[in-house]
Length: 335
Image (cartoon, rainbow, N blue to C red; front, side):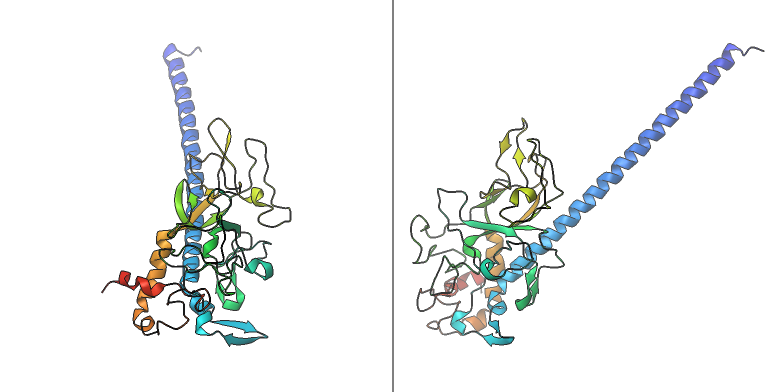
């Protein structure tokens, strides 16, 4: 028996509905998958950014508690306390880990690259972020060696033999105005005007004391360069395998994180090719953290004889090379 035209049309409509429902279900499933992937990527991004910010806070604590962390040295398994005049002032940050073992040892304990205003590759040092300092019982969370890169203005490191300052091996004085800006043992072109601010940049914004960089998964860039992190070598030697290149919309290479200059970029739609996640410590954040420490101890600090060699007092290259002129800034603490 032949089916009627009405029955044929009904069958066709049913088949069409089934197809439409199948396509709709596939679209919904695809959208669900896309949303799941996006949520996962978002969760990973937030986790990494939280970790970067935790490291940032640990670095600020390291800077704030310099006098306490370095009030003694471990000599032949015996703790030897330093004279007051040899204690570092607050504000100094660690040197970088070059060999990727997680520690700052031997030659790594001094790092310097005095700033030449005509050379964008000067005024900072970079390498792997150290995981901690065993002899100081200070650790940057549960980090793995080579997990992060670390860039720091070389005036702010606590070991820099290019600044002798009575053999302290530190840039001094280090204070909220960075004044005077250069110690007497620095020669041109590295004599900076008083108040010269840090010049590390992040996404085009200047004034960073330090940057912490999480290198995302290795990439093959649009110019064909492929990152390979299986090779040996120092953090400087292998920087291109960890930090990213940057391109314009036409594929032309721009300043990137692996170029060795003072300009750095974090992952964004505008920074094509950059998967690195970057968090920085601005000079104003550094000022606030260190001034809070000084102000919280004001009653005790102001009782220190102003003529003694001590980080709170005036800097003098031979008599008080650890001085930071901090006494001059107590007016900022308020009533």
